[in-house]
Image 1 (cartoon, one colour):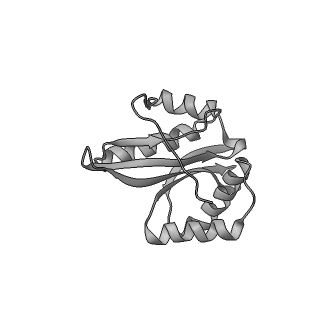
Image 2 (cartoon, helix red, strand yellow):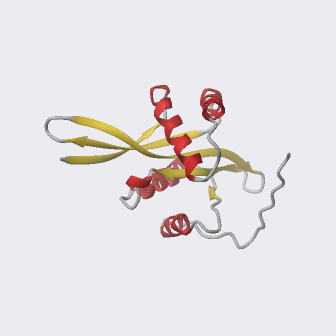
Length: 159
């Protein structure tokens, strides 16, 4: 059996696969299952053009059967730097299904995000990750992202 990995931009036809992956992602983070709210949120972002989503797929071919499984995604949100007068991309979410980890898919997703950032002439790409997310930190540092030692991040959650 042969397999081929591919990166695809999200389109309307792939929304159900993306919604399924997004649900799995939230569950992997220990969040409660809210499929209707997740779908509503993602469809609104998609149709309003609020984000840029890329999907990773693995295509299998046994010579008899050919099929594709979607293995992960990355979501980029644009925002802007008034200091640099350019767009910055926020890599808000990157996820690879557990059975496809350590196969280069996370690297493919991240490299595609970096390429999008460069092609759009932005001033850079920003990623926040949980402190205990050692795999994510290792992945992004290997690809040239560096820890910001110049600013503090602050957050206030609204109840």
